[in-house]
Length: 251
Image (cartoon, rainbow, N blue to C red; front, side, top):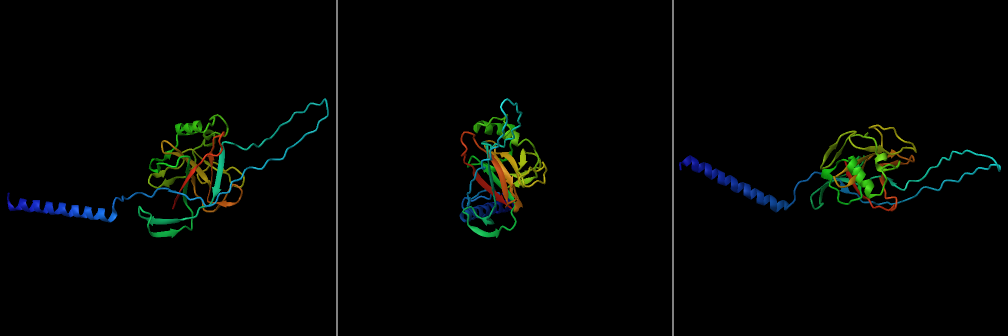
């Protein structure tokens, strides 16, 4: 073996040794930590006030015996298939390691991001995509909701109009690609428009339906109060105490 080849082999060995030492040093410093994309975090609920609709007053009509009266009864009936959540967001944006030790954080002055809600506490955020008809049908079956009723999930989320947004660790959900609604403002329906406030989008990780609302920054809501979010989620009509789990992504 000539001197040139020996030098090449020697350099290669030294390079391998240096790489091995750097690897050992990295493991010693960081253990089994691996870099990950920022994903939605579990949200802590600090205020819980639940109320129901008031009973509407009864009306009456008096007619003489032997008469024939035709009536049109206008009835507003509270649904048993849905419940609503409204409120505001507090918190901070932070830079943490895998043990949640913080090297720096930022106070929130402008709220933006999303709130994610699901019946399952183990959502795979890296797999989230637009919910399809099969995902929605499966949820209706699980919750004993007849898809043909006016207030079913499929008849409620029957349009695809919403703005684009980004899910940490997943990517961008394109505008008007998923089933979505915009909840009411000032007791009135909003037109289907990508600029509407309080948009709610149906996503799925393949197993779980995830109700996703885009955060606002202290905007007038359904009752003219100001909120960062408002959204609706379905219930089993025979069991209106279904538990939902909350995550939020800020920034």
